[in-house]
Amino acid sequence: MCIDLEKFAHHLRRQALPGRGLGRCGEFVRKALQAAGAELRPPYPPSGKLYGPALLALGYARLEVPNPDRFAFLKGDIMVMEPCQPCGHGHVAGYDGSHWISDFVQRDFWAGPGYRKRRPVVAVYRYPAPPCAEDEARTRPNPG
Image (cartoon, rainbow, N blue to C red; front, side, top):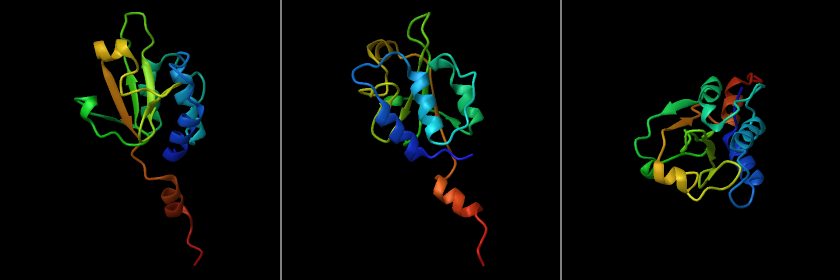
């Protein structure tokens, strides 16, 4: 399986809703992953905060990010955030190389004023595999 990070970023941008979205971050990030080639099957994580194990199963690696405001994120990185209130679902978003996007384009890393103020626990994941085209070229038999 190969996840095409260009397709992932393109799908995130194309599907983002105007304004603050509808609270469907997990669905939108999942659909972008699937559009990029990820094999995610039901049952899907029911909350944004629960996406970590699914990302690890897809081959993503968890990064150490001591300060998200000063970290150099790469296209395709995905963040999983704990809720900023006790009964919340948390948040998941993907980085398109310029913006964090879930079901809306975020103004920064933090998903909104509550997250920005409380700064809950966050995990960031990166897909370490080479781009799909290079991966396919390496595994394709030589015609010689």
